[in-house]
Amino acid sequence: MFSALSLFSGAGGMDLGVRQAGFEVRACLEMDPYCCETLRSAIARDNLKTVVIEQDIRKIEPLDLRKELNLKFGHLDLLFGGSPCQSFSQAGKRASLDDERGWLIFEFVRLAEIFYPKFIIIEQVKGFLKAPDNYGQIGGVCQLLTTQLQALGYEVKIQLINAASYGVSQYRERVFLVATQPGMNFSFPPPTHGKPNEQLCLFPLQPYVTLRESITGLGRPSQNKQQPPEDGHLDVTPPGDIKRIHGVPEGSFLAGEKHLPEQQRGKLTAKDTTKFRRLSFSEPSLTLRCGEIFFHPREDRYLTPREYMRIHGYPDDYLLKGPIRGRSGTVRHLDQHRQIANSVPPPVARAIAAEVAKSLKSQVLASAISAGDR
Image (cartoon, rainbow, N blue to C red; front, side, top):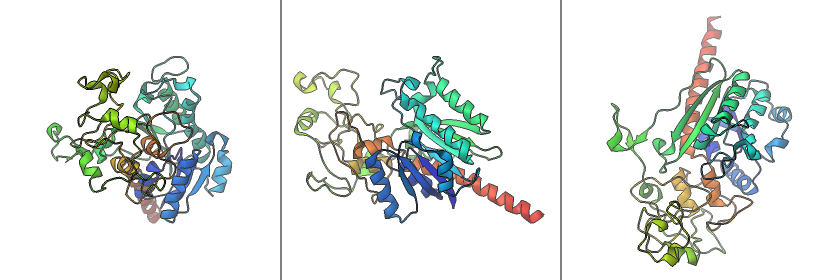
């Protein structure tokens, strides 16, 4: 089994996909306490030997970590993760490197210097591609990261990937950077799903997975906040939000429904297309975000964490830990909806990691043949 190290692990969506592709995740580095509870739960469920390191990555000494994991220089197969996106996200202030969180992506370089893994997979939001550096150069952050990885000897490939193209019932575009040691072959996986009326290929893709397909069968959610169900299928919609979403049709948003009372619409503007938004049963979900919780297509309630997990591609036996909160306000630690929205959909991670595993297997086979020829 190939070895892997997870950075900025979050709720473990990327870890799950990487494990499904045949890797042993030796350790997860994550500082959010609720996410760490979720990771430990998943590790216990599957009886894994993975170590959860609940600490700020900037305080980690890479050489000590490498020794702790009993790995020699160049022996780690895969280093992977997705650093915080707020400084690059189009939904935020886009402060780039003026936000200290923007510098966290270079922790991959710091660990790569010491571990020198065969592969590195980094996930980021689309805005990362154009994020300016400290000199105002558009795309400068991406170029700086690429240059630093190349200086270590890596070859770098970057691709924008839509999760819906890999069987996730969600339109979610994210940037994936894959760095490889010289001589390691890698190609991004071809899409498996697409819109039926837009397919021009010889072998048609499967149609996108709709919201209806992903959340069907869960039944009515619990409303018992004192004893929330373990699977997270809990409705926490406050009365005020129930009143405000009432009358908004499937697939629409409150600000766009001018026929509804002005008092109900409040201070929303035409730009507020994701606030008080109902999803549509007949299409994949919009991108799940931390700032808002989307509403059920027809019921006057939020989608539950379990429904979010179905949309994101988590299996039903994967359990989140931590509170289930309402949709607004600033939080210090990640509740269950935010844990999912922050994570990489497991099917996307699995598809990319499977291509990495394919390359590693080819290398092992080639080495075996070469040894036999001697």
